[in-house]
Image 1: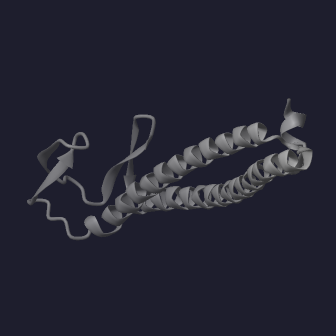
Image 2 (image 1 turned 45 degrees about the horizontal axis):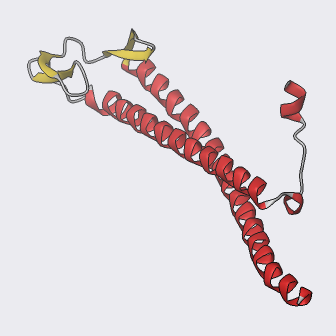
Length: 161
């Protein structure tokens, strides 16, 4: 099975029927749609980590221990609180696990996450671009086959008469 993935066969689009080309087009449309959704999710995650990085880097400097802050419990629920130690923060490291880190270590963690997501976003951008180019080629071949079959029909009838 791994050999099939690593050695994909190349088939000339000219040899496919319009029905087969339509199926290929549909599959490419679905793949582009899925990859675009993945791209959006990665971009949203990256924006979240960038915001966390910004808060860690700039937020702890100006905090007053006596001043109230809003602590997020969920995406839409916040409670009043006080920052006990501006030099240490709780970092969500994934799958519901939180770790206390100093602000420097938290910044490094978020910078690494932003970098990883940037690389993944670039990879998906390249894949989406390739799939979109393939989709355009398939659409063009399909359009030409439909035109040929449509033009060939009346010509064949005129020659037979």
